[in-house]
Image (cartoon, rainbow, N blue to C red; front, side):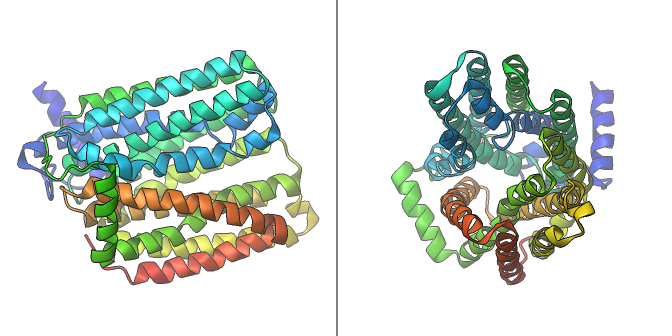
Length: 437
């Protein structure tokens, strides 16, 4: 056992790039010795979570499921809003509950197991669901999955804040993104092999594997050695809302961060429009979408560790640079349609821009995650994360609807130009944030 601990510490030191595995800034002394072990458990948990996310993707897999069972087309349009906003909106309401728990990892475990149950439900619907009733059941199960995802998300960040030192969190999230990128490659390869019309059994197998991914996520969370934390300040939902709103009034840095994060939504919102533009211009089928998934995985593997290292030095700088990169990628996507037909009518220009934007989007995610975890203290970290995510969920619904209307009116290239200007505003906002590292 001692030899295993030494070997584990050496690999941990190689991954983090530091010879001092006992760097324990901002975590309890009792958590210091467990940090290498917990680091690897966080990594494997991330692998299971990301693989499950890709195999139940609301932008790819679930629309096929709706088509296979013959659900109405209008239901397909509800998949992404339910998936994204459902994971973000309720987080403020559960923040006070989580703060009442001395060990928050069990909330994470509960969320992972609920997502596994939901994925199994979707697998059964792939086999037996039909028509409008089947589609409505898919949306209902997806709502449960999204709520469980939100529960896991806030607990994961809180457990990370208690078990991983301040100068190691960005690095952990960077390597997690790299491992997740490898999982995305596997998912993309599966999708390309299945071609454009996967049957009920193939979809059921994909979703069953997704359930196993969340079971792995929950098992790793259960094995994390978490020091009991303070439980003072736990609130009910209404008290959490009032406290959260008071934080926005009193903590100007937190308010400014949320403004920057709202503007940085431009990277997430631009990704599906670039993929849609590629589909429309190139006329490719699911093989093109599979290619998008593969380049997304490659980009994540290459980008995340680099962004993670930089985030540990200056998460504000990462947010600023990622905003600038988002603006440039949106411009490239908008002008790609004016390339010669030999280029603009193939998937490759859009796949390349998509890959670049995925790299940038990893920077956005790592920058803002590291910033808020480092900005908040141990006692209020869960509330800060929950409030920020709830605000983002509201904005996702509102802005997503507005952008859909703009895309219908202006066209996708002009919408990307609008998002490019929004990203410039995000860059200027991030530049004014204070350093928190």
